[in-house]
Image 1 (cartoon, one colour):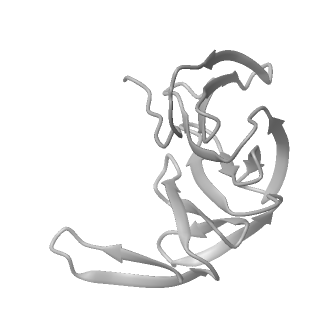
Image 2: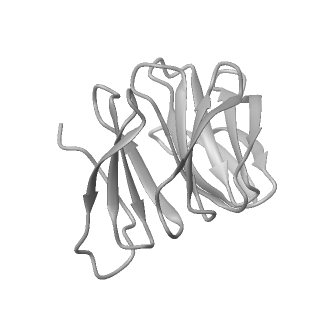
Length: 157
């Protein structure tokens, strides 16, 4: 159920990894492309060595399905969001939790770091988008107005 496959542009399958025990919900590459992370309904976030297609860390901390993950654009820092309404920051080098962000009232469905890595936007089934300044760990914006779940967030370059 939780298989990750590497493909070439000509659609040749290069590698296949049994990454999780439940469906994979998100993938994100490290800035160097040497590692990547995944999240799954098995409640974990995992870091993999890309070249070896081998797991490096398995991180647990969500109380349910993990729906999204994003690797910081410059650091070994991951953000994940889950069905438990939590956003969790992880140290990708050590495989440890750094912080919990309790800000949403429902499942965090999507998240994305901005280009300089100072801000993290999160979208939720509570129909809001929140922006956090990670340097101060403060919520700096709360966008309301959606009439349905927020399922994708992206920053303008």
